[in-house]
Length: 258
Image (tube, rainbow, N blue to C red; front, top):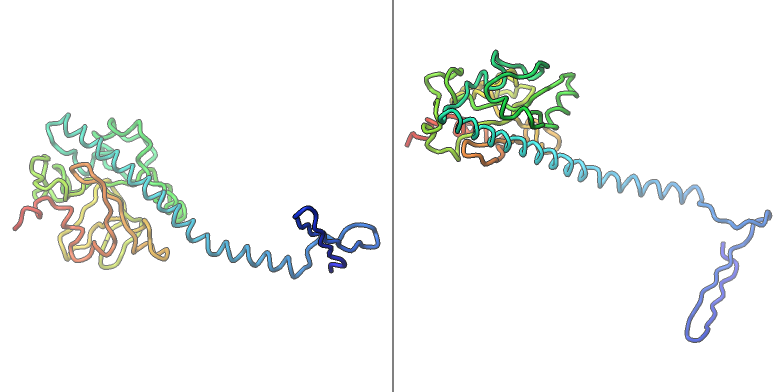
């Protein structure tokens, strides 16, 4: 408790002297009481509870931007490849590995697009790597090409082989991301090769990823990054994939139907 308070006025200034009682040992009483300490801890805990979700959102947004930047580099690499091969797309099965790939393959890729991306650290999205590690997986790449672009893929006759056949390059994706889990009513497969094969509705083969910026942490309701044939990047929300929404930006021939 404060014993004496003295107010002095000197030359127009007011000074406040506070004298604190001394303990028997001659030292000043300077410490917090237990209640005061608990109040401070409670305030810090409250601030952390308020700030942590916001910090997590900022962190995920930064990761999303980084992964989108990777895909932008993929778009540039594909542009270079198309210029070198008269506009022909690489085989969607074998663009990364000549014998087909699994996202955990440890050997060096040898597919036709690899020379255009091998010197760039752009093949694995940090968000995908974090999710993979949490599931006991060890991903080495995280991007898949559009299964409708290139000869020899799953869709064969329904695919296009040359960029001149893509009438709306700003509307058709060339590379995107996939999940490591199935979503009922949307996908029947997880990331298991180098191609992203989206069936016409009501088919549910592959789907775009749904883990970026997931609301409330629900990884089935987030978004995927994409790069389009014309080189610009964008995002696809989970709800936009249903009822053929993902098919609309996958099949170039679909865009030609009135």
